[in-house]
Length: 223
Image 1 (cartoon, rainbow, N blue to C red):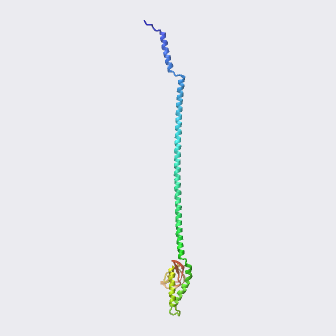
Image 2: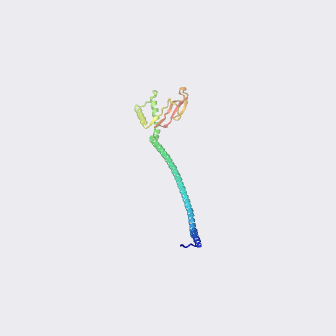
Image 3: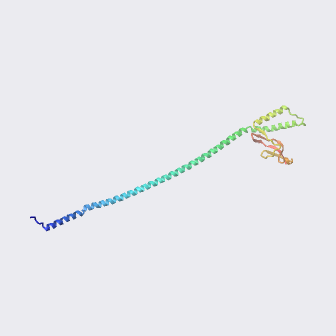
């Protein structure tokens, strides 16, 4: 025959089981402290991560800004160099053109100097040529008693040919229109409508030396 359980003991066992269950469900102070520390640490980690992300973003923005500034400076430097290069090219072209003009001018002056090197001598000889021409003209006049030997005439002609080979050339004036750039008018005489403004007589012929006037012709102009 089994022994009957005491109701009081049964109630005490139930109460003891309930207390143990409650004690298991209620966290201890250490557990609460640990959970709070973990929560705080998590929040700190979130804040730190946010700050790091913000710093990284700022660094990236600074890098982009520096890169953009560097690119802008490079473009400005390239534009400046291109402008300086163009300026140097312009200076070079101007200097080259000036030097080329100088070279051409000096070459022309040298050639002209060579051509007219004997100008002073020829100008001094022109009065002698005038005397020869007057003497020959007088000798050709039938009423003149003076006769020019044929040998002297030949020498004169040879002398003139030699001077022409050196660039001397007499101006053609008789019957030409008067040109103040070539002729010097001594006087004007009535010569009719056909000879108005034309040269009717040459007192002293003019001469060229290689197309350069070395003596202007002295003429009489009709009016």
